[in-house]
Image (cartoon, rainbow, N blue to C red; front, top):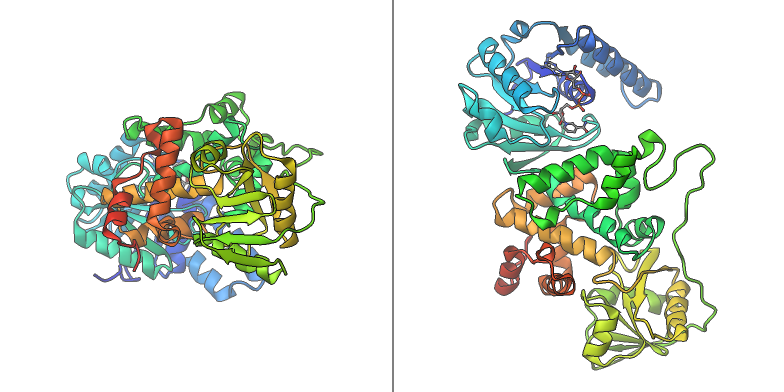
Length: 505
Ligand code: NAI
């Protein structure tokens, strides 16, 4: 299916943060764009704002003056819906309210051409439900841009129950022609990104609540070991706790209170206090004048760098071993069950059991568990945990070893699956469940998480890399440790494991 031809006018309703950005995207792609807002003067003001923004890009040499002029000339503020009569695509980005949106869509059906495509930028309302009040629900799709729309590449194109596949295809092609990365999703709560991303916030909130580490340490691990652009606390401080908490509550309710999406009391407390994050000056961190930013906890050691004996296959830790060897650490191998002997300590990747539990189960002394890293050869920090009773000298040897290879070590309280491993396992689990339920394809789920929230790797590609066996084991152990269905592995993960199939070939 072809994209909408650039000689077909586009209309955007709602000239707020999203509407203005979307109008700019469509105008930059060569369409004439009508911008309407029911607040008098708002559309013209938004176009002036776009003009100021483009002028800055021209001044810094990032945009040609002719491109700015073409974009601004294409933007037309209008003050009645009747002026949209020849638009071929109308995108609404008005207030997030079901009845108000339904009412607008009915008015648009009356004032636009019969073959006009209507799209909603809603982030949480069902497209099926929006379509239910319409005469031609087959012409409606979701077109979910990310903020800021001119910068963020992802567009989730949402198919409601009644959406015409040809309309969906045209919107996918049009988004691509506008330079975006479109993904297709069924109309389900949270679509792809707002659903699959929930554990990123939820697991850090839970680790904090359970005293596993402080905010700065957990954020540093997600950044420096996990490869995420920001940790969950700094990111939610940026998004705003009022917004992030509301999205969590809406997804939780929409999935009939599935405990996987359970909101957090500590985030609610911030919302109750008005500590919304950066915008209010306080959130998990303090942004007020003169406030000091806390640093991640980093262990120091004066122990000698020990030799390492590798016992058996160590899976993803192989990358760490190569780094240690390159740093001059003496490494030898012998048969065994996937452990590293580091002086007095035994070092292993967490499998979701507590260090205390695993020490008993496997008869190990001085067991130190290692957290996951996106990239062991390149990471700058790793989390470790150990059971009460582990000798301090053994922990010191592990810290000395990792520090010798340039890795800062953050201590975590002995906890199931630690920080990065637990977060990634839950992200992959949610992504697998979305795939199981036919929300989107594996390729689109991973693309959405990379382009929409800048994840360093798609959760399903991450699952392939770690091995589905390890993930199911980690989730099973989490579920046993907590006794909560929140951590139940998705059938899709078990199925892939049983079939020996990868998410991506
Ligand atoms: P906003 O509050 O900045 O802008 C909404 C605009 O719509 C306002 O200018 C308002 O005057 C206008 N408006 C309200 N009711 C109207 C009506 N009946 N007819 C015409 N204009 C009307 O809101 P924002 O953030 O731009 O969000 C708009 C939509 O985009 C919402 O559905 C929101 O859920 C969705 N969205 C928001 C994102 C964000 O990060 N802010 C990201 C993705 C989607």
